[in-house]
Image (cartoon, rainbow, N blue to C red; front, side, top):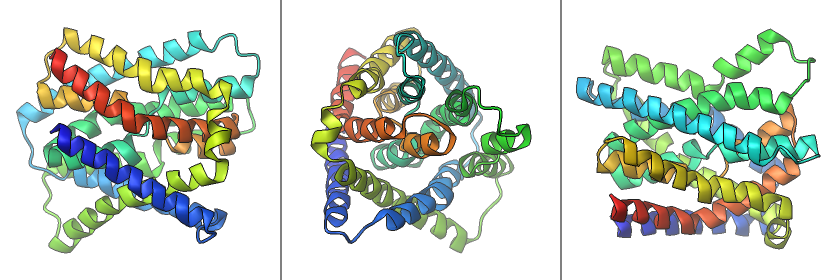
Length: 310
């Protein structure tokens, strides 16, 4: 399994390198990257969520899913509290918002789903989805409110729409309908979901590689403000998860998925959401770059550490 994980990480690194190369060559520009982000957010990632939940209904699996969701909620709340305490002395409010946001929200859709799909298949994807649902829900509720701060210019209706009618949440609703009703999709629809699911890894890693090229490796790694949030996201977060797993029995595969998710880099949407709703988007971009590059090393380390301690 460690061989498969290393291969998956190397694959993602190579895709990032492709994104870096085509951005440096001028083949991919801001408009092209924006189009890829739109495709990722609105098409391929929702398709991946629906595909993950388009599986046979199992009462035992559903029971495990409920425990997973409860554990994930507790984990997310701990991250929120840790971020609030850790960055309470940051005087720049825009930096504080994006640092707290980045420490709490992971790239579970664009990096976590593809990684789990390669390692554990459809069953693993179901558990990954159950774990990620609370984090994504919090991102579009608590996270959105965090970035908006005291901004009262956004109406309640628009705020609620952003929270509960975004593509990711709509995909979750559709996935639950499929799972509980056991509706059988036509063959072309299942094949389409599979094709779009497979495209998510390629598109997401090319976007990250493009951001590395845009910001620059040196510029990203000399940012002192980014290191503390990076430390919480990919170092402290998995440690918290490993400690939590000492108090709950979930099975080896589920626990490995939990640790992988806790080790994931900053949510790729953080930069986009900071630009749209508030927060230091430049710092957010640096955090995306740093955490994605370093997580290629830390994910295998923590996953193997948890397995050895299990």
